[in-house]
Length: 252
Ligand SMILES: NC(=O)c1ccc[n+]([C@@H]2O[C@H](COP(=O)([O-])OP(=O)(O)OC[C@H]3O[C@@H](n4cnc5c(N)ncnc54)[C@H](O)[C@@H]3O)[C@@H](O)[C@H]2O)c1
Image (tube, rainbow, N blue to C red; front, side):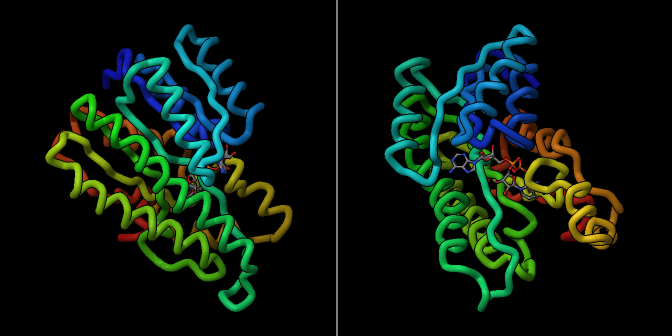
């Protein structure tokens, strides 16, 4: 895959899947805009990329705040004059509770970051891509964007929203050479999903979750990133509006 000198924005790139994506796209020659609300982690991601001799900058952004997202895109245009690829990946999980016990603030926060965040990003990225004649967007959804998951109503709602927005925007801009897809990860080892910490807190839970995955293991961040990279590559030139499960067969 050749992403040489492509301007690539990754949100939620201070940690986990987003950081792994930033490192991988940089290795393939991309110039990476690392974006996150978590400043220290974002700066660390940039340092890791620069240590390999590649280019990256950090722009602190809260994807749940439209003004912050607008400023991010304006800075990218001012500095680089274009945006070739956007990975809208920032996300949070909410309270672990049944529907009637779900606190309102968990609903509001999760929808703000996961659903509104992706909408705000696409709303401000697509005009740049229209202007330059094309681009590729990958949104990070989840298997929770394809099926229900008890005790996670806000997260499931927000990720179904990501899948729906991906399909809708893809149809609207397909003729303008902008491809928009989503990945739907299963449990992926990262600071968000840490089986070791879970094992300490609630004995046996990771084993039960793993047993549901036909491949009988959790995903590695690199496996999610490989799917993102393919969706952004010329190899996926006729793929748009797709929500790709990267799930060891779980949704099969
Ligand atoms: N890890 C999993 O098992 C799993 C499974 C399915 C989907 N996902 C999705 O993958 C994406 C990445 O998750 P991860 O596992 O790398 O988690 P993570 O917690 O390691 O990384 C998420 C990043 O998003 C950032 N972020 C949170 N709120 C933000 C905001 N308002 N503005 C900007 N940045 C913000 C965090 O600071 C963090 O750096 C998320 O969208 C998550 O829902 C993860």
